[in-house]
Image: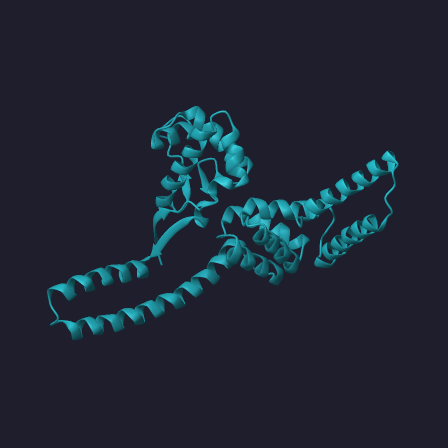
Length: 288
């Protein structure tokens, strides 16, 4: 069932996101943010994707032509967006705007029919009441159609997950389901990452990473991947590993609080270093 994208919503925290703050700090950051927003709007008609049609000699020059900006600025913007995972390359001639799906307002065909039906109903009400029985019958037909659409959507979502990730493994199924419910849609370009992640960690640890994203109000793919990568570096492969590491940090903090304070400046410096070490470990766990 086709979806027709109609708008891009700028969330109230859009300019407070770390990626946008970092982008704006660049020498021509204000221009790069405008370019990013123009690219998001342009990608709507192609299901969040931008294609290179070889009209110009390079991808950047072609985007510059499409959105009326300078090619050098486009290149700088693309380089930054790729670095922070706000675009994902499918091939040399195509990339996905990963954040667009999170801030896109859309309506499917059935929703569009409902909207148009309501508009027509208002007009008919002002013009005449003689078609009341016909209108009621159409409403019943429309409700039946919408119910069928809902059932189709459920089957389509299931088929989409299996087609993108080839989910035969139960752990992989759970991980992709959690991702789509909380982070965003699945893309074929991400298939290998999901497969590799499911081979390294169980779905309940993946769920813990998502809980941390929600708690930090940063449910972006790049933030989630960053948490999991830090866990891999810390050799945290199960929920039990995570809980044990967190308990270890709590115990170290409690021991430090119970330790009598000494006036020796060297001892105070050691305590301060231990605190910094604990805070660093907490940041790697994603819990601070």
